[in-house]
Image (cartoon, rainbow, N blue to C red; front, side, top):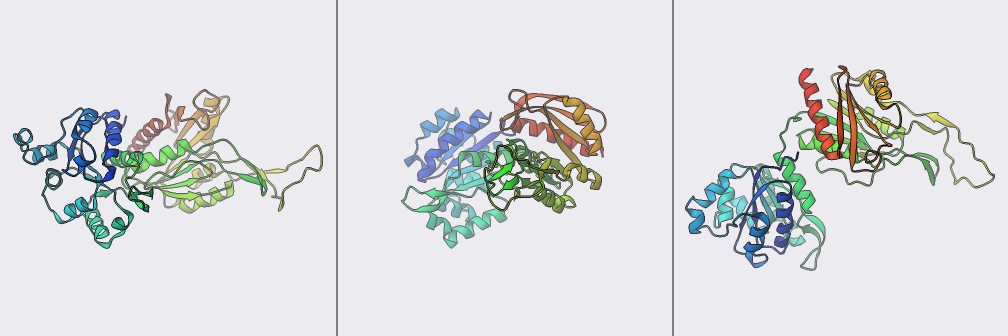
Length: 400
């Protein structure tokens, strides 16, 4: 279940052209089960109407500091008190400056001073304004006070300039909101995750690989970060962007992944090996493209290093979680892997099952524990599977 569900979020909208994008953000929050109360500055109403945001949120929109309806309950205080989170999107240069200097000349500015809830600020403005020393100083002041800043995106701006200044994508803002609201039960953990497919080159243009997209591993890395862990993601080839706040180490081959994992092993307190690593690689790589010279081509392959086995042999206090992607004898093969690799948990999935294979957004897995316990997780989005896996890891840590 999303950490956003059931939370009361106050969304502050200030007077920039990106104010219309607040409508999309409100819809996304409501869809996730949040109660959204919108507070608009006077200039924001020049770009989008309160009626629009009221319709989308299902709640009355606050716009004036001396509204008789709101002030019957001291509006800026009541809104500030019941907020689980305050989000300012978009935040203009002017409003960022007011926050930094403590100016309270509007309902929204007063609310921000009064709230004890976490605050997320999403700046959006002309690229030159954003890069101005005064604006950057103000953003730095807010960060120093614990305010979360979601950096603007780069691209073509409404003013005609191109560069950093666009309101961050709704998906990025939602990710930061979920991060702010997720309990940090993994704070202090150093999590090493592997993901994606390795490539074992035959020649400069051909390689042996597999269809892994990295979606499961990336979901695990994102969930670890959401829960407060420091995360290193060692990734083979994947079309996915790295999760926010995660250190990405990109690799190509199984040997590259082995080197990167061993480099970070002593640093880690938790290792999750979700990558689809090639078991075999060509004994040698041709320096040039292999030409068609006959009806057959024989490749001599060698075993790659067993990364999970070596982790299991070298582990100290780390919790080690491995994956078993199988097409037959799922539970038996997973149990063998759990024992032989000295893992604390194996996540087993039948990659031939509908909706549970490579590149899918869903998965259906069995969890096998060193204690002998087993748990079946029905088909669900990989992000939800990642949450449950970390719930179980948290239980393992408590039992150590």
